[in-house]
Length: 113
Picture 1 (cartoon, one colour):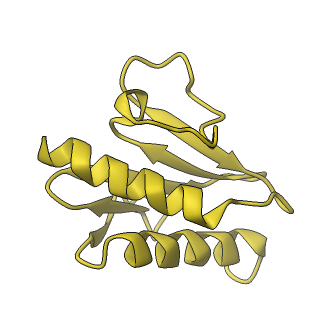
Picture 2 (cartoon, rainbow, N blue to C red):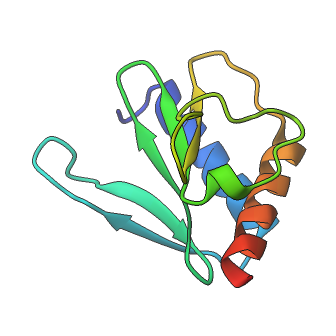
């Protein structure tokens, strides 16, 4: 993945998450031979989201996404899941940074309630 568009997208999401909630804790989990860097996870008073890379997309999965308000309709994956929701981003996709940060703040509030 190093050097391709997915690296830049992961860095962008990481930056937006930290802008929205500066106290967020990032950890890499679930390392395996096919993914030695693991999966970045972001937590504050519980899991907020994970950011995974795939061949053709970067996926931000919100642990409690089904309970979050998403007025800008960023969630476009896992829409039928009982608890989680995800945002699939493909090369060239635009992301509404303010709406994404609002989702992060909403997820933290859900963790605290």
